[in-house]
Image (tube, rainbow over all chains, first blue to last red; front, side, top):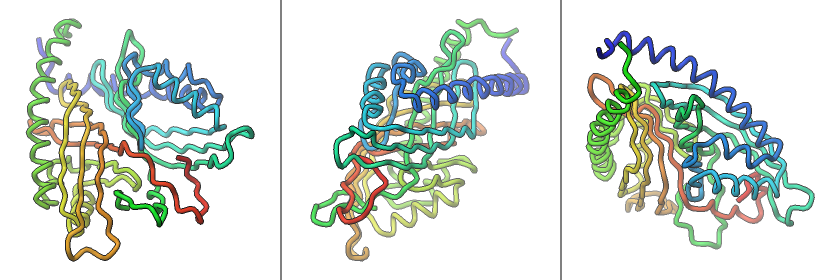
Length: 161
Length: 161
């Protein structure tokens, strides 16, 4: 009754091909929602308990935390997000994907003085979950390729670059 | 011949329990190799093509790149790594795990002047692959919970905090 290793591999290859296509569609939506300032819509791309494991801050857990964080950033910046998928592997209801991103954020005219623009390239690893036939983000961790800025010289840092 | 959804879930639960235990063992080794300065041994915990998706630098691809990077850090620092596993899900030869870590690094006596200590807490997402019955790290992305340091005031930054 169990699959042979060959049958399992063939099934996973087929599921991976399907997941890759579905994930590409979700990522085009993620980019569009991000670029158009639609925080609510971004949150729906995650599972109910989805986690955005952002760098340099605590993980955001659940759709509401993710939405609120996006809305806060969108109030300050116009942004341009580009996601490039590289590796996908799926098996049944789970998939893992890695890739790269670029993100530019330009302060809006009414942003507080001193709000700095952002121009970042980085990489990500995503845990996808198929829920009622739909691939959603269960966990997403990302980080920048850029070196840390030099800390201000007069402060005592606990951080090594 | 295919599993029912209930059979698939029961099998995944069993595989997840097994993977969880095996991964815990690998992580105790990761901590020990890290704390004892064994760069070669750390590299063997990754697949041949394994990727360490480190923050604030390019991803390290393959065991040799991972070993060399570890060796370079270990020459400068004595360190203490603690890994706490939180969520694991496995299905056949793949598993996804998330958790948190703490990492303290103290410059060695002969480290160049200005080498700063590091005291970091963060989170990670790991893509595990079972190769010949052994769970290995295929991809590992992590990032710090700490805010970015304030950039030095006289430089023009492209980074928003």
